[in-house]
Image (cartoon, rainbow, N blue to C red):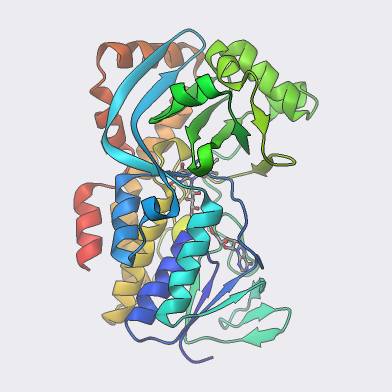
Length: 371
Ligand SMILES: Cc1cc2nc3c(=O)[nH]c(=O)nc-3n(C[C@H](O)[C@H](O)[C@H](O)COP(=O)(O)OP(=O)(O)OC[C@H]3O[C@@H](n4cnc5c(N)ncnc54)[C@H](O)[C@@H]3O)c2cc1C
């Protein structure tokens, strides 16, 4: 196959296809979902992610995104609020991913939906139901999914939790209290993010220990009741809430802390979660995905290989991934959770500091945009 093949049409794959097509390269993208689909994601668009989206010509506000400028840290006994220091946006992935793929097609990429890559052979040939192709350049952007023949070289350092996501219609008073905030709710064995998305729905996305899920006998309603009993603030938010999906989305084994180690021999370009997985609370996974797509396509277009790209990405993202993973690990310590909220109540400026340490640096983002 002449040109580049991108496997996966999430933010990383779609952005890579857009940048390559706009540079006049021949590019095909395979996305396994035939139609736009929901994703397990807090749907918090950081300042950095919005910057890359603006470069791509995508305006989340025009798609209905809501603005968020405060964070509320909630534990069993405390609630502390602080300014984020920037205006984040919140937009469902179903809308965002579809808009990005539409931009890719408009830019001239061949976007093929409903095509699942099954395996990558030792010579770089990619197998799908309709046969096998061998592209000149192969981008792997399949997110958390490991593809046969191209599995990650490590499984992350924090991958024991289960992830869930539900959309809810909150009671009017709770919706009003949540507006403009992302609530980070810490509990035994995990944490939740709660924020409004477009059309006045609320996104409740959380990680929980398998023990806690088992203790609730795999019943999602019982799990929410259990979490609400521990954190009354969550119980108050969920009182009278109506679920908007038939059932919640679930995921296991997310390899948080994974960072691809570049090896001299590689020919594959790993993007987004295939290159690095940053803990979700940082709200920077999509930014990292877009950042990786920008770096990789710039490297390809300037005649560099995947090794140089992976080294640069590890340099840009490694520190943030490691620090965010450490913080996520610490948040699992009972004694530290309430302490964190108490500290935040006294020193709200700590939010900015924590965000700086657990996200890509402004300098790295600036350099990638200029690459
Ligand atoms: C619980 C949780 C909460 C999160 N919250 C946030 C947040 O609030 N903000 C934030 O910025 N990030 C968040 N993230 C991280 C963010 O979702 C990811 O980092 C981001 O989606 C990575 O983008 P990607 O393009 O690499 O992969 P994905 O978005 O996962 O996209 C991969 C695409 O590849 C397709 N695909 C998979 N396998 C194949 C195949 N074999 N063939 C063809 N197509 C395939 C999939 O259908 C999908 O469309 C969260 C993650 C989790 C788990």
